[in-house]
Length: 107
DNA sequence: CGACCTTGTCGTCATCCGAG
DNA sequence: CTCGGATGACGACAAGGTCG
Image 1 (cartoon, rainbow, N blue to C red):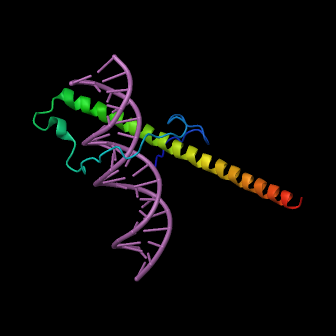
Image 2 (image 1 turned 135 degrees about the vertical axis):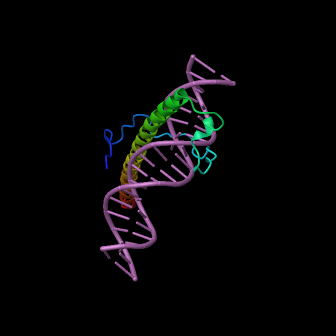
Image 3 (image 1 turned 45 degrees about the vertical axis):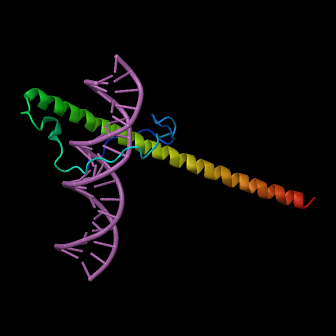
């Protein structure tokens, strides 16, 4: 199903400034959609120009949405990477601590 | 096998936000 | 202000899985 190009590789976010998303939950939810779309032209007959403008806008937004999703995926992958690294680090430190405790206990 | 559920992807709309 | 890009939310659709 034409799943387009995946990006590069582990932990190299192209953007989102190194796993930093802006505050979630600031959007106040849209209007349930449905009969939307022509709101901008509701009262007037759409001219060929406005139709063309709309097509351009939709095309650009379509591409923007793709890019946005791509970035989001990469961001999540980056976070998962960090989690893995930190978990590993944590484990190492716990082991180290345990070893040191053991050492001091025998002194 | 068909009906239903789940998951992933896409396009669109509404909204936010920064630039000019 | 206006404009345009970015993004959250939603519905539609397809593919795969599960169950009777």
